[in-house]
Image (cartoon, rainbow, N blue to C red):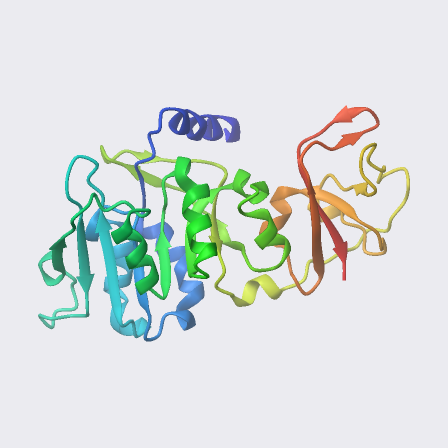
Length: 288
């Protein structure tokens, strides 16, 4: 089943079919862990279908509870003008945020996140929360990191080892959210499920500071050294030895269990070799 889900994502990327919208349920399940970050903040949802997506609906419904200052959403139109939508809170008193309660303005350009207008909106916002197109994730997160923005966005697991992403992960300036994103909705309304889609954020939350429980001891037979790196192979996160002081290679999926108070990420190994056999890429870590 996991292979089928990943194949769906790869096929979509190859076809540049990036228009998968995040469901309200998926947004709510993740963003409820970050409530304290949004008070008096301007939130930008700039890779969505204006005020109709899960991100926009969530923030509008929670506007007063979170104490938001403003929500900004954009719509992208590759063949003409995009639009920007702004929401400043409930107007009719029914606490149901209707589209007509948003201020709508036509943009001079297409509404792309990397256009002059798009970059200006990023600079205006305090926090960016959105689902960027899979094929443009590198470009999108590079802009956010270069502008030192706070964000919570969606990307696939492979992004962990991207040149544009890994240095910030290694330096504890970027980490994963609390869970996988389980479902998306296509333009046609069809639900899509993938197996390796994650939240990337630099908003801190309590759960990431909970240490892993380690119970195994190091031995040479169970933890072989890499042929091409000074470190040992740990094939499963749950098998990390509690008494090894050197560098250990772990699956990239370790990152969703990473406690920065317990482990230091020191490197990545894109082509590890163990006893002459190539295995999948690894994160290189040390106990603190």
